[in-house]
Image (cartoon, rainbow, N blue to C red; front, side):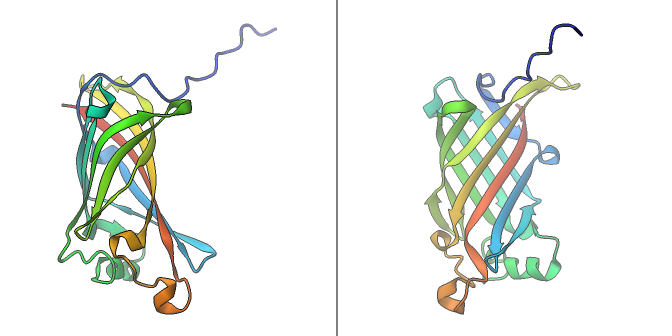
Length: 191
């Protein structure tokens, strides 16, 4: 016998960090997306320019999330495709330089998951988009700042935001999928 077996690692989930406002650390955070291409493939990308803050409160209904993403920072590792995404066919970054997410209140789910209720605005079109996520813990970093980590995801319909370029009704065949999956991995610092 080699001794007492190690306990399993702690599962992510609640308890939540202390009530405070937390700002996104852009160096350790990522906003990814993916969309179907020609039905069989999947194109992935990210936005490299974003900022935001999370308000944690003992009252779950008082939680808040405000995030702003610079649409021109879209990056799919293909310059031609990125320019197309910046064009008026998609994000129209000249006229709509930012998209925003405003969250207001959360609900806890089973297995340590939570849902934050909020609204996503793209090209001045706002639609409700719940984020489903998980709290991954907190730590005091070497500077003495409290750092927390979350991951969240959502599924949005392009049509809800007027992003209809290359939908099957226009092109006769599905080139770019109807749905976009958004995945967020964020570290935040307490103010």
